[in-house]
Length: 229
Image (cartoon, rainbow, N blue to C red; front, side, top):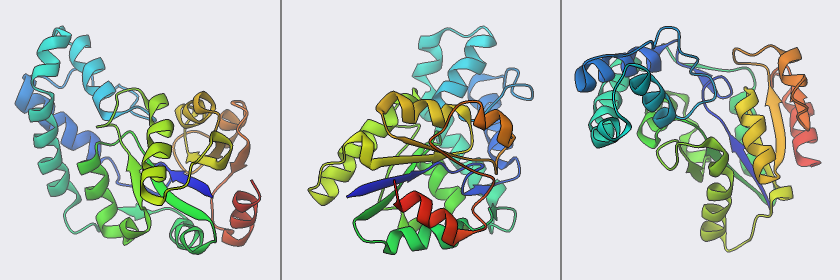
């Protein structure tokens, strides 16, 4: 069996800045500062990594940040749900809905998530897309602050779910940043990059992914390439 793991922001959807706004409000409420969040590069980083970077950058001790991390993410999830609202501001990216559904129906294929979002944030963002039921499992930023640890966790969860093992060469990690490519490489998985986020195609190509797409608007072609790996 193969395991196909999708990133969320910039790969499945864009929430048009809702995450940054909700996190800034949560950081201010819990820690008294949002640090330099307006200039911080969120792309491809896990939510815990973002919080630690911003708060330590603002002068807080790591242990002080850790002690209130759960409070911060509770506030963030509430704020994100309010920001997303009815989901009208969430845009599903080209071809992705059809691609996910087709992969879910493909033989010997299991579809999951690999995202830096905490699990609650992932569910809030995905709610309006109608795609959540197709993702049978996930590995999230709330599982580990280091994105490179998430593919192996996803593979273990997939094995627990299906009874089949998923060696790295049977795992595809799909994302829109160099961090997605790096975490796939760290595990030995197939690195699939798509230029629907904020990194242009040439920057992703320079990272040497196994497969590279401008977007997934040609679902048939994308499906054929993904299933051939």
